[in-house]
Image (tube, rainbow, N blue to C red; front, side):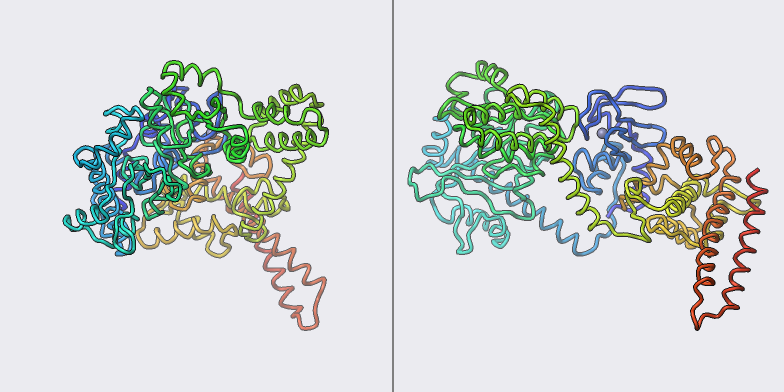
Amino acid sequence: MIPQNTIDQIIETAQVDEVIGEFITLKKRGVNMIGLCPFHNEKTPSFTVSPSKGIYKCFGCGNAGNSVKFLMEHEHYTYPEALRFLANKYNIEVEEEQRDEASLEEEKLRDSLYIINEFAQKQYTNNLIENEEGKSIGLSYFKERGFRQDIIEKFQLGYAVQRSTDLLEKAKAKGYQVDLLKKLGLVTEKGNDFFRERVIFPIRNLSGKVIAFGARTLKSDKKIPKYLNSPETDVYNKSKVLYGAFLAKGPMRNQDECYLVEGYTDVISLHQGGIENVVASSGTSLTPDQIRLIKRYTKNITVLFDGDQAGVKAAFRGIELILEEGLNVKVVLFPDSEDPDSYLRKIGSESFKVFLAEEAKDFVLFKTQLLFQESKNDPVKKANLIQEIVTTIAKIPEPIKQSLYTKECSTSMDVNEQMLINEVNKIKRTTLQKKLKIDEANTPKIDGITTEDHSQKELNANEVDVDYQEKDILRLLLAYGDKEIEEGITVTQYILTELQEVGLETKLYKEILAEVNTTFQKEKKVLDNSYFLNHPNNNIAKLAIEFASSPYELSENWEKMHEILITEADSNYKKDIKSGIMRFKLKKVNKLIAENRIRLKELKPDDDYMTILKVNKKLEEMRNQICDILGTVVY
Ligand SMILES: [Zn+2]
């Protein structure tokens, strides 16, 4: 674990504009910097970075946070990884605290697995260069395919020999645990090498560490599987890895384009032909995780298909996943019985690049045309086709793109455009309804108020008011916590005392208040908004970002909608806090009075009439007091 004071130091030192500027181009606009958002597809910049507040916020998709959050989102780092990245960038020494036993063990295990994989990769590569069998079978195979020496080295290709315990013995001699070799799938349960008489393609993660192997047999025996792969391990999750991604990171970003191919050799061939923005899903069908991995670098994917139209149709579903993630998809078909690898060798890399540029077709239009040809004279088929296309279009998240496609498809299929639009909308509604149902089932309810997205839920006015009032009190607490509100009394002390009896209702706000309280009681320390910006609870951090990023917007709206008085730039925070608390209390007391009146009206036999009356009187007194104070504070 990284100690808290180091974390503080890292976050204080990190310049959000510098950190983000490493990944996307930012331009100065007033006190802020703006750029194209890396988290959604946009043409005009709505991604705003505030160097003074240390945060970024996209007004298009809502993604927001500080330097750490950006790295976690953009580079998919874990929290500690993001911190270490920043520490390294700003030369801050990280002295790790004693970690708990379990996580220490876990990391040790992962490290060992990486080390053993690297060892195995070196062995396999060595076999290819020095071992007679490796040279005559493995190396000559690669040479036959036309792979240059530099490309063989770049991809760390290798060869696993025939001898059944070759790798095992060498690993043992090095002192590696046989258990771990088995865990990695390098050695079988019986104690033999798993990969034998195969050429080896090491699979690396985004930071270049070897995490698994793909292995191809060179025998023509149909009973032997052509490819073998490492099993999933603590360091290898098949659905999250793309072959070639480590080498393609920069090129994908620079060229704003990713070529997706099917096999290892396609990736390698394209590299050799000078095309480096290429990855392969290597056998498995494309997963959402893999698509998101690409999305970190570019929004444009071109899928290179080998094989016939039947094969392409089988891949439609996978491609629609890409559309759902909001990426632009093109497809390229190769002439009969050619794959990218073979075709590139056949026509050479320059012609190949021209071919890609000329043949790439927009996926939706491509699908439309392909299916349309098949259904030309068959009305039933045509109806099915329309349904298909409409379903595809409905999956595209951006409305503008959707309407472009609807237009195009109505022309190319000769179908009424409005009819297509209606159908698309129908599907979108059904999907949305399904999604809302799932969300509802998954969101915990607190007194009828959900912690997220209250704007979309219909709440009764009172609950909304309470929520906004509570939120505003918190905002003021976190903004002015250490300032004095009265002589010798800080805002924190004041609000904690005032809220002691009534408390807050919304769970999220309660949590924040409790944390402020505990820290204040224990350490006499005042937690402010910047502390919560970096809070591990994402919902809390989100709220803090909201507080930090748009005080004006909020206060204006709130004032109008909920009679909360917030003066310009909070210059009058003392008044605001006092009136905020009083208005909040007033609302609560009014609610209690109303409830009590109902009890009086619907008196039950064992209700104590006198007590209820007394409570009523007490509550009304409280209300009058509050109104008095409000009268003096507010005006
Ligand atoms: Zn965005």
